[in-house]
Image (tube, rainbow over all chains, first blue to last red):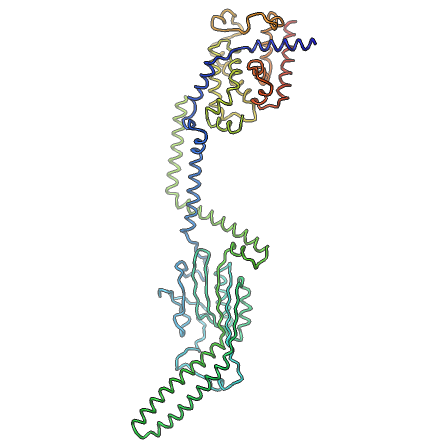
Length: 372
Length: 183
């Protein structure tokens, strides 16, 4: 009880000690002084002040991101150095064979450049269609038991190592004693190139060649046909034989001709028959060529890791790895583009940054001077 | 005291700073008055305390107590003023102080005057000065501004129990000090 009384007394004593009215003038004056002291850039409302302070970093970030994005668009990625990187692809130029008798020379569409590959250079020339070179082997044609099967194969290959696979396909064709009758390559966008090959592979090497292609990229589509041309070949042979017999008879008649009129008629008939013989022989040569050399059409597609990450015919592990690769590639590309942009924009950015720093220093000094 | 207000005040926003420091304006003024004895000087010193706090608010560490921080600033400013003026208030006579505007609290006899006879109030004042800054701040808020424990705890960012125990300890120390002075 005594302690309680003493405590109450102390409370009253303390209240009395601290009992001091705080002057209203002081309350108002320190507030005014603080408001006067407030930096001028803080006088706006807090929300707007936040916006104002954030404006510069946001603008800088926007310039950096937009600049990086624009740099990525206007600066196409150049192909990696290598044997196949010597020709331009940006213009989506298509290569095409300049002619059946000169398959090792490929001209650009505009005719300015020549492109050749080893496989093409070694292409056999024994199948040219000229009359002089046509050497139809009657003995072979007489072999009625020989089946005339024309094989064609069409493949679509997705490749993440485009240039290496491009070269490998041509090398494999050469190794199989084949050749490329046409090659074209074009690019729709960066890292999205396409190449189309029409390869002629000896029939006896076709299966081994197709097996070797399995090691390249990822085959997404395969189509194979075998057309039996035996009947057509035999018919053509019979028609040719008939024409040859007719030619023999006409030449005999020519020797026996007695009048000029008969002579002219027989020569006209001989010319027509010769034309027919040539035509039929050409057909037989064509079939032989088709049979001896299978046609393999390869469509090579360049694929980025992000493409393969979306593919459904690979394992989830491969998709995950490819997805990660795609992200890292994108990130690397982004920073690469940012670096290019920063260096490219340095002549503009550096003076701007210097001007801003000078402005800040001058402003700070003025403020310090004002406060002092 | 919200974090947002602290951030704004640190960036120099006057409104935020005023909102944070207004609860301590009485405590600052009273401390200045206790040290300087003269209302006008106390008013100037208290205002200077607030301005100096505003200028150096960026250095204020959020983990410390704003009231104690302001108390220290006020204390240092008052010491500077006293040094400059060579003013030794311990030796100043009450009459001189009254002439220069000093208005000592509570002139009429009250129950507490009965309790604190003679020099007891001076002894109490001196005893208060020996207390740690935090306890002096708490006493000023409690008895000067008549704040509740809860409000003190809120503005000082202290647990309620800490406020209660600190004030209890302060009163116990004061009681001993006053008793010693009376003996």
